[in-house]
Image (cartoon, rainbow, N blue to C red; front, side, top):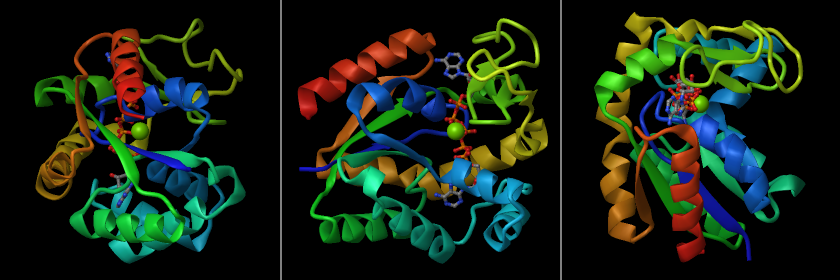
Length: 218
Ligand code: AP5
Ligand code: MG
Protein backbone atom coordinates (compact mmCIF):
# COMPACT_ATOMS: atom_id res chain seq x y z
CA UNK A 1 0.00 0.00 0.00
CA UNK A 2 1.44 3.38 -1.01
CA UNK A 3 1.91 6.15 1.56
CA UNK A 4 1.25 9.81 0.77
CA UNK A 5 2.35 12.54 3.17
CA UNK A 6 1.80 16.27 2.65
CA UNK A 7 4.05 18.83 4.35
CA UNK A 8 1.91 21.89 4.98
CA UNK A 9 3.10 25.27 6.25
CA UNK A 10 3.84 28.85 5.25
CA UNK A 11 6.81 29.94 3.09
CA UNK A 12 9.92 29.45 5.23
CA UNK A 13 8.28 27.01 7.67
CA UNK A 14 10.95 24.40 6.91
CA UNK A 15 9.04 22.09 4.53
CA UNK A 16 12.02 21.58 2.20
CA UNK A 17 14.48 21.25 5.09
CA UNK A 18 12.41 18.56 6.81
CA UNK A 19 11.58 16.77 3.54
CA UNK A 20 15.29 16.34 2.81
CA UNK A 21 15.84 14.86 6.30
CA UNK A 22 12.87 12.49 6.44
CA UNK A 23 12.24 11.35 2.83
CA UNK A 24 15.15 8.90 2.89
CA UNK A 25 14.23 7.63 6.35
CA UNK A 26 10.68 6.96 5.15
CA UNK A 27 11.77 5.58 1.76
CA UNK A 28 9.54 8.07 -0.10
CA UNK A 29 10.30 10.32 -3.07
CA UNK A 30 10.39 14.03 -2.18
CA UNK A 31 8.11 15.86 -4.60
CA UNK A 32 8.40 19.64 -4.34
CA UNK A 33 6.27 21.66 -6.77
CA UNK A 34 8.54 24.70 -6.27
CA UNK A 35 11.68 22.63 -7.04
CA UNK A 36 10.08 21.22 -10.23
CA UNK A 37 9.17 24.75 -11.37
CA UNK A 38 12.72 25.98 -10.61
CA UNK A 39 14.20 23.05 -12.55
CA UNK A 40 12.02 24.03 -15.54
CA UNK A 41 13.12 27.66 -15.24
CA UNK A 42 16.78 26.55 -15.20
CA UNK A 43 16.20 24.45 -18.34
CA UNK A 44 14.32 27.25 -20.12
CA UNK A 45 11.18 25.18 -20.82
CA UNK A 46 7.77 26.68 -21.70
CA UNK A 47 6.45 25.54 -18.31
CA UNK A 48 9.40 27.27 -16.65
CA UNK A 49 8.69 30.55 -18.48
CA UNK A 50 5.05 30.47 -17.48
CA UNK A 51 5.77 29.50 -13.84
CA UNK A 52 8.45 32.17 -13.49
CA UNK A 53 6.03 34.94 -14.48
CA UNK A 54 3.98 34.10 -11.35
CA UNK A 55 6.82 33.10 -9.01
CA UNK A 56 8.76 36.37 -9.30
CA UNK A 57 5.64 38.19 -8.07
CA UNK A 58 5.04 35.74 -5.21
CA UNK A 59 1.76 34.61 -6.83
CA UNK A 60 0.61 31.03 -7.34
CA UNK A 61 1.04 29.29 -10.69
CA UNK A 62 -2.48 28.48 -12.09
CA UNK A 63 -4.14 25.35 -10.71
CA UNK A 64 -4.62 23.52 -14.04
CA UNK A 65 -0.90 23.67 -14.89
CA UNK A 66 0.21 22.71 -11.38
CA UNK A 67 -2.28 19.87 -10.99
CA UNK A 68 -1.33 18.33 -14.36
CA UNK A 69 2.37 18.56 -13.50
CA UNK A 70 2.04 16.88 -10.09
CA UNK A 71 -0.44 14.21 -11.27
CA UNK A 72 2.02 13.18 -13.97
CA UNK A 73 4.90 13.18 -11.48
CA UNK A 74 3.02 10.94 -9.01
CA UNK A 75 2.32 8.38 -11.72
CA UNK A 76 6.05 7.68 -12.27
CA UNK A 77 7.88 4.58 -11.15
CA UNK A 78 9.77 6.26 -8.27
CA UNK A 79 6.43 7.14 -6.60
CA UNK A 80 5.13 3.57 -6.51
CA UNK A 81 5.70 3.40 -2.74
CA UNK A 82 4.04 6.82 -2.38
CA UNK A 83 5.44 10.33 -1.97
CA UNK A 84 6.32 13.09 0.42
CA UNK A 85 4.68 16.19 -1.05
CA UNK A 86 6.17 19.62 -0.31
CA UNK A 87 4.37 22.77 -1.50
CA UNK A 88 1.43 20.91 -3.05
CA UNK A 89 -1.53 21.14 -2.60
CA UNK A 90 -1.77 24.86 -2.02
CA UNK A 91 -5.42 25.60 -2.91
CA UNK A 92 -8.78 23.90 -2.28
CA UNK A 93 -8.92 22.90 -5.98
CA UNK A 94 -5.46 21.30 -5.78
CA UNK A 95 -6.44 19.38 -2.62
CA UNK A 96 -9.58 18.03 -4.32
CA UNK A 97 -7.61 17.08 -7.45
CA UNK A 98 -5.01 15.29 -5.35
CA UNK A 99 -7.69 13.25 -3.55
CA UNK A 100 -9.02 12.18 -6.96
CA UNK A 101 -5.59 11.39 -8.41
CA UNK A 102 -4.71 9.25 -5.38
CA UNK A 103 -7.92 7.22 -5.71
CA UNK A 104 -6.79 6.35 -9.24
CA UNK A 105 -3.36 5.37 -7.91
CA UNK A 106 -5.00 3.20 -5.23
CA UNK A 107 -3.99 5.40 -2.30
CA UNK A 108 -5.06 8.33 -0.14
CA UNK A 109 -3.55 11.13 1.92
CA UNK A 110 -2.25 9.33 5.01
CA UNK A 111 -0.81 12.18 7.08
CA UNK A 112 -0.46 15.97 6.87
CA UNK A 113 2.25 17.36 9.13
CA UNK A 114 1.54 21.08 9.51
CA UNK A 115 4.71 22.98 10.40
CA UNK A 116 3.44 25.96 12.33
CA UNK A 117 5.80 28.97 12.53
CA UNK A 118 4.85 32.50 13.63
CA UNK A 119 4.73 35.00 10.77
CA UNK A 120 7.37 37.24 12.38
CA UNK A 121 10.02 34.51 12.07
CA UNK A 122 9.40 33.75 8.38
CA UNK A 123 10.86 36.89 6.78
CA UNK A 124 14.16 36.46 8.64
CA UNK A 125 14.33 32.80 7.64
CA UNK A 126 13.77 33.46 3.94
CA UNK A 127 15.93 36.55 3.51
CA UNK A 128 18.80 34.60 5.17
CA UNK A 129 18.29 31.42 3.13
CA UNK A 130 20.94 30.14 0.70
CA UNK A 131 20.01 27.39 -1.77
CA UNK A 132 22.31 25.01 -3.65
CA UNK A 133 22.33 25.42 -7.42
CA UNK A 134 22.79 21.73 -8.18
CA UNK A 135 20.21 19.95 -6.01
CA UNK A 136 18.39 22.57 -3.93
CA UNK A 137 20.06 21.75 -0.59
CA UNK A 138 18.97 24.37 1.93
CA UNK A 139 21.06 26.54 4.27
CA UNK A 140 20.57 29.60 6.45
CA UNK A 141 23.33 32.07 7.14
CA UNK A 142 22.61 31.96 10.91
CA UNK A 143 20.51 28.85 11.67
CA UNK A 144 22.12 26.30 9.37
CA UNK A 145 25.29 27.77 7.82
CA UNK A 146 27.41 25.84 5.29
CA UNK A 147 30.97 24.98 6.36
CA UNK A 148 32.28 27.39 3.73
CA UNK A 149 30.23 30.49 2.81
CA UNK A 150 28.68 30.21 -0.67
CA UNK A 151 29.50 26.50 -1.17
CA UNK A 152 27.18 23.50 -0.66
CA UNK A 153 28.52 21.02 1.98
CA UNK A 154 26.96 18.09 0.14
CA UNK A 155 27.83 18.55 -3.53
CA UNK A 156 30.23 21.52 -3.57
CA UNK A 157 28.01 23.57 -5.91
CA UNK A 158 27.42 27.30 -5.64
CA UNK A 159 24.83 28.64 -3.15
CA UNK A 160 22.46 31.38 -4.34
CA UNK A 161 19.60 33.44 -2.95
CA UNK A 162 16.23 32.71 -4.59
CA UNK A 163 14.83 35.68 -6.54
CA UNK A 164 11.55 35.37 -4.57
CA UNK A 165 13.39 35.60 -1.23
CA UNK A 166 13.58 39.41 -1.21
CA UNK A 167 11.53 40.92 1.66
CA UNK A 168 8.82 42.48 -0.55
CA UNK A 169 8.08 39.21 -2.39
CA UNK A 170 8.29 37.18 0.84
CA UNK A 171 5.58 39.38 2.36
CA UNK A 172 3.38 38.83 -0.73
CA UNK A 173 3.97 35.04 -0.57
CA UNK A 174 2.91 34.97 3.09
CA UNK A 175 -0.26 36.95 2.22
CA UNK A 176 -1.07 34.50 -0.63
CA UNK A 177 -0.46 31.57 1.74
CA UNK A 178 -2.87 33.00 4.34
CA UNK A 179 -5.59 33.59 1.73
CA UNK A 180 -5.30 30.46 -0.42
CA UNK A 181 -3.42 27.73 1.45
CA UNK A 182 -4.14 28.20 5.18
CA UNK A 183 -7.80 27.03 4.69
CA UNK A 184 -6.36 23.55 3.94
CA UNK A 185 -5.43 23.23 7.64
CA UNK A 186 -9.14 22.95 8.49
CA UNK A 187 -9.74 20.63 5.51
CA UNK A 188 -7.17 18.08 6.69
CA UNK A 189 -8.06 18.52 10.37
CA UNK A 190 -11.60 17.52 9.45
CA UNK A 191 -10.29 14.47 7.59
CA UNK A 192 -8.36 13.47 10.74
CA UNK A 193 -4.96 13.50 9.01
CA UNK A 194 -3.49 16.75 10.40
CA UNK A 195 -0.44 16.53 12.66
CA UNK A 196 0.47 19.95 14.04
CA UNK A 197 4.12 20.66 14.88
CA UNK A 198 5.95 23.57 16.49
CA UNK A 199 8.19 24.67 13.60
CA UNK A 200 9.89 27.40 15.65
CA UNK A 201 12.03 24.76 17.40
CA UNK A 202 15.54 23.96 16.10
CA UNK A 203 15.69 21.88 12.87
CA UNK A 204 16.67 18.55 14.51
CA UNK A 205 13.98 18.85 17.17
CA UNK A 206 11.33 19.43 14.50
CA UNK A 207 12.61 16.34 12.63
CA UNK A 208 12.40 14.19 15.76
CA UNK A 209 8.84 15.28 16.59
CA UNK A 210 7.83 14.84 12.97
CA UNK A 211 9.20 11.28 12.72
CA UNK A 212 7.68 10.32 16.08
CA UNK A 213 4.27 11.71 15.04
CA UNK A 214 4.38 9.85 11.73
CA UNK A 215 5.45 6.60 13.40
CA UNK A 216 2.29 6.74 15.53
CA UNK A 217 0.04 7.31 12.54
CA UNK A 218 1.39 5.20 9.70
P1 AP5 B 1 8.06 26.89 -2.92
O1 AP5 B 1 9.39 26.62 -3.46
O2 AP5 B 1 7.19 25.77 -2.50
O3 AP5 B 1 8.21 27.93 -1.75
P2 AP5 B 1 7.35 28.15 -0.40
O4 AP5 B 1 6.17 27.30 -0.17
O5 AP5 B 1 7.12 29.59 -0.39
O6 AP5 B 1 8.24 27.59 0.68
P3 AP5 B 1 9.74 27.77 0.83
O7 AP5 B 1 10.48 26.83 -0.05
O8 AP5 B 1 10.09 29.23 0.70
O9 AP5 B 1 9.95 27.40 2.37
P4 AP5 B 1 10.13 25.99 3.07
O10 AP5 B 1 8.96 25.76 3.96
O11 AP5 B 1 10.50 24.92 2.13
O12 AP5 B 1 11.36 26.35 4.01
P5 AP5 B 1 12.89 25.86 3.97
O13 AP5 B 1 12.98 24.46 4.45
O14 AP5 B 1 13.54 26.22 2.70
O15 AP5 B 1 7.21 27.75 -3.97
C1 AP5 B 1 7.78 28.84 -4.65
C2 AP5 B 1 6.78 29.42 -5.64
O16 AP5 B 1 6.46 28.43 -6.64
C3 AP5 B 1 5.43 29.86 -5.07
O17 AP5 B 1 5.47 31.17 -4.57
C4 AP5 B 1 4.53 29.73 -6.32
O18 AP5 B 1 4.73 30.83 -7.17
C5 AP5 B 1 5.09 28.50 -7.00
N1 AP5 B 1 4.41 27.27 -6.54
C6 AP5 B 1 5.00 26.23 -5.88
N2 AP5 B 1 4.08 25.28 -5.60
C7 AP5 B 1 2.90 25.72 -6.10
C8 AP5 B 1 1.58 25.18 -6.11
N3 AP5 B 1 1.30 24.01 -5.52
N4 AP5 B 1 0.60 25.90 -6.71
C9 AP5 B 1 0.87 27.09 -7.32
N5 AP5 B 1 2.09 27.65 -7.33
C10 AP5 B 1 3.11 26.97 -6.72
O19 AP5 B 1 13.49 26.78 5.15
C11 AP5 B 1 13.53 28.20 5.02
C12 AP5 B 1 14.79 28.75 5.72
O20 AP5 B 1 14.67 28.55 7.13
C13 AP5 B 1 16.08 28.04 5.32
O21 AP5 B 1 17.12 28.99 5.29
C14 AP5 B 1 16.32 27.02 6.43
O22 AP5 B 1 17.69 26.72 6.63
C15 AP5 B 1 15.73 27.73 7.63
N6 AP5 B 1 15.09 26.82 8.59
C16 AP5 B 1 14.30 25.73 8.31
N7 AP5 B 1 13.85 25.16 9.46
C17 AP5 B 1 14.35 25.91 10.47
C18 AP5 B 1 14.24 25.82 11.89
N8 AP5 B 1 13.52 24.85 12.49
N9 AP5 B 1 14.88 26.74 12.64
C19 AP5 B 1 15.63 27.73 12.05
N10 AP5 B 1 15.77 27.87 10.71
C20 AP5 B 1 15.14 26.96 9.93
MG1 MG C 1 10.74 24.83 0.01
